[in-house]
Image (cartoon, protein in one colour):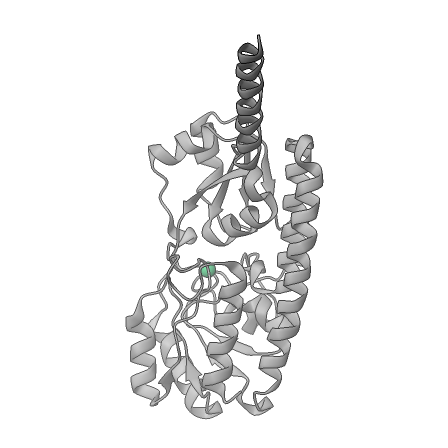
Length: 309
Ligand SMILES: [Zn+2]
């Protein structure tokens, strides 16, 4: 009898251990898809262990010119929730969602931000006529205040999709929002050290409009807000004249851009090329911009060090 009781006690103890370990290593309860790597990181930060996140356009990928595969359609069909940036970044997305037959809600994380308009590819003359034919600039994540809006939208959408996880999503989001506040302060401190006359930067495509508005650095780019259209030789010539006239201290290459254009500009203007910056996607895990926070910090350091900050 004693033996039997021991066996039962042992079995109960084992069952307890099994239950505990399965709680500690809980399977993610919902599957989320994020369209590009920067957004994927934000969803992971807020979703934590409860959410399994798949990313369509991975590190160093270019969401402007992405061509989805049948595997991407299956990933979306399999998801409980889909996160997109919106503002025209993912022009391929509506067709992909339709083709996939997905039933999951699509959440536009940029909802609620104060948008900027950019110039249409090749439309450099539009503003000269005194009116702007520009389309929306999608790169809102480059302002840390907007990343906070993204995080809030992600939290609300996850709570709605998975009410059971509410407390954790709220906790994760509030911890992350604090980190973003600290990051914003850090960015401003780093940039404050740059002499005001030096606060001008050339990049390949116009991905830093929101960063510029938030942090007071002027950016000029030969390509418009998308990488779809090539810069015209007239655009390049204009920028070369501008760099020489305004003595712009440095030019930068984004991780998603072709290096030839910036190399040519640097050569013809005798301007130095700063460290590679990350505009539209993160670096790979072992790179300097594997998370959103690391990306903003890396870019800001790159600007500050090249501009004399
Ligand atoms: Zn871009």
